[in-house]
Amino acid sequence: MKTMMIGLMAALTVSAAPPALAKPVAEWVDQTTGHRVLRLTDTPGSASLYFHQNSYTPQGDKMVISTPDGISVLTLADWSIRPLVKGKDIQLLFTGRKTRTAYYASHRRDDGAGATTLYAADIDSGKVRKIATVDRGSIGSINADETLLLGQWAASDKPLQPDGTQKRAAPEIKQQFGQANYAANGPDGKPLSFAEAKEVRLNERLEARIPMEIFTIDIRTGERKVVVASTDWLNHIQFSPTDPGLIMYCHEGPWHKVDRIWTIRTDGSGQQLVHKRTMNMEIAGHEFFSPDGKWIWYDLQTPRGEVFWLAGYELATGHRQWFKVDRNQWSVHYNQAPDLKHFSGDGGDSEMVAHAPDGKYLYLFTPQAIPDVAGIHADNAADLIAPGTFGVEKIVDMRKHDYRLEPNITFTPDGKWMIFRSNMDGAPQIYAAEIAKTAG
Image (cartoon, rainbow, N blue to C red; front, side):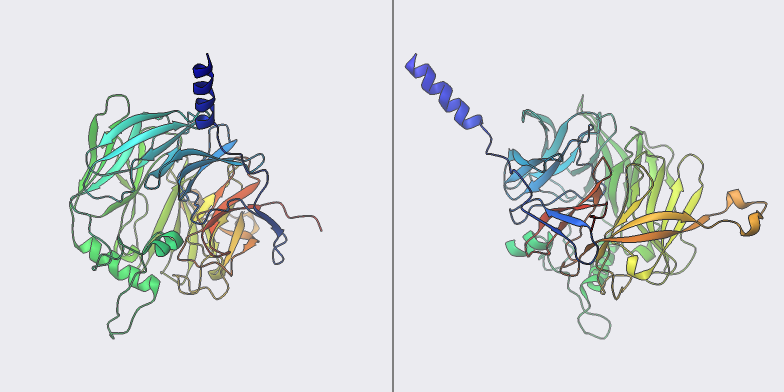
């Protein structure tokens, strides 16, 4: 009996989770914007997911985050954090839209050859099960009913930096930015800025014409099906949040050189270009689905670095809406609130494509239509692009943030907070900003 009790106590000790954080690590009212900001983590290198990856439970009560030690669960009601899966090299991928499941890979990957094992962790119990082993390629999305995984594969894993520093960056660089610093010289032999050097490396990768595939894996059977095969650079793969059979992907490379945004069905049918460039140096990208899956939204510039829009394409009708964005409000990524009434923007620094002199803020955008003058409508008005502007509110002052780390804003499911990552305090941490302005 004594032996049994000792064993039971040992088991309880092993399974007991560390105490959750009782409150945010730091809290303040932004003196520039008047909005409350919370720092949610105290472990350097903590990160929320990429802006279009789902990190929330279907019920909207919890989200998953990455930490240097693995994966943790954040409870939105009280901001408490508890570990879910431990492992220094695992990669959090996304949460399910149907079940309370966090999906992750056995190790960090880009899109090259080599096997990866996918796991699913129950967000409440912590129970882990193996989903599939991907013999080649990496997984980027899961469909709305959680029956198919979406992946991409390349015949070789070419580093964007020719000397390989993109892959073997020093730990402090990886922790801060998740990548090496891009470096290249311009035609005059002088070093280019970070943003321009990245363009050079993107073009070199595109011109390598490496054979690639976008594929699905049936979670129930393990069957792998190729959806698209090409020597174009295929990237930014994502399933619709509501249609289990609809995929969006991009042709990667310098954006002014490629028609980037495409959709296709899981059976390979219905391949369609969403936005075709009609102007030299026009760019479109950082595409994402609306929360209800009815629209695709993307950063559009006509031309690059001069005229800025958040452009939308309605999947069912082909209708288009473009909202004008001022230079300082241009953002690395945009996102849409769950109620579809607002967008977020995470700003950018002066070296980025907009060269904004004062763009380092997080923004809340409210769409405003431009009406027909005097109620007089063109006969074909319904077939034309519907233009609009944004009402703009600054939410967080990001002037202490280094934009080589992208903030990647998401809205909480109740629409009351923006969650983002930042290095404003030094090392990357996770923050929340309250959308309602603090009284007084």
